[in-house]
Image 1 (tube, rainbow, N blue to C red):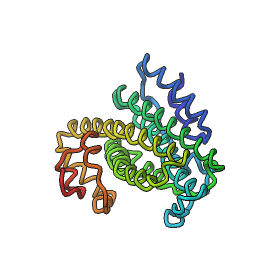
Image 2: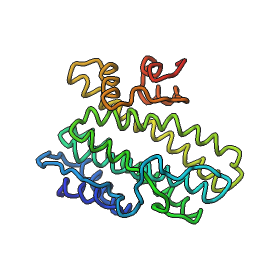
Image 3: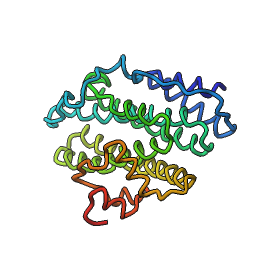
Length: 269
């Protein structure tokens, strides 16, 4: 198998069936074979969803309100679907770009990609039930931009993607569920809430994987992982972002220490 070529096809395709099949093939192959990192990773100027979605500045995104209408609910589902789509490419890109890491690293992020593909398919199905499809609403390319910024550093990637952005998702997810609570008698809303519970539980594991590999690289540098983590957040201007709700228990399960959680803004841990 041409490992790097298969990853390039998956990363450039906006067809979820292509991404899924390649991910499953690579996972099966990696489980039984050792890999050699003997290629120069490419860098792309546009995200794989470029031809499928209208990309706008984050401040121009459609407002996610009026959750009592199918369109309002679809806008919210679409936003989460886009996050899951981006998460697929981020996981596959980690495998492609940091193929010099231990085999367990590659297997971990292929498993994450498989999870994110399942999340995307689940959410896309709900969009279809509401009468919409992925690409019907505008999206931003913030995750693609952060992938570009961290493409030369596996440590920065682990700190910023799973240990910052995905960890923030652990905080936001329960707040979305709470917003939907008063409409849970609606079948599609109840289905959405169930999906969010599944995603929350599996994202804890994704953040835990990022935590594991961040610690692994910090120990290789013989550096204190806590100070290193916050130095990286500062480098990317992320340290002072406001976090009104911190999911303390989920973050602890994902590997965060109480010291880190309090620095991020929690009053108690």
